[in-house]
Image (tube, rainbow, N blue to C red; front, side):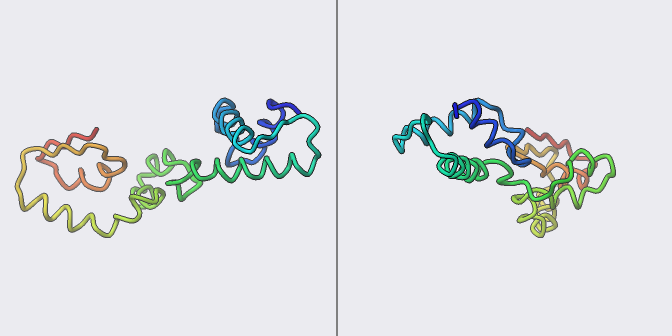
Length: 137
């Protein structure tokens, strides 16, 4: 089996199918070099084990923060902001803190808020500040 075929085999799993071939190939190349493995004359069992290991490595990156399979766009279109916020692990972890954060910001009576690295925060916070300019980058 050549590297291109093995990349295709690795990407057969639905959750990994959206990763670019170059990323999978790079991960595979690193693994092969690190373990001094040549793709020539590998048994089917060895090929499966390599594919399984690369998939395991790639899963650490794919969906690391995604908790829901449903598209965030669907949640936005449905105006279901609560589920949208819960669909991302880091936002979901902070969701109980948002009321306190909003209270703190309001107590400061700002004219504007600059939220750097905001992620989904504007969806949770900005609606509470109708007269405050909210900048999210």
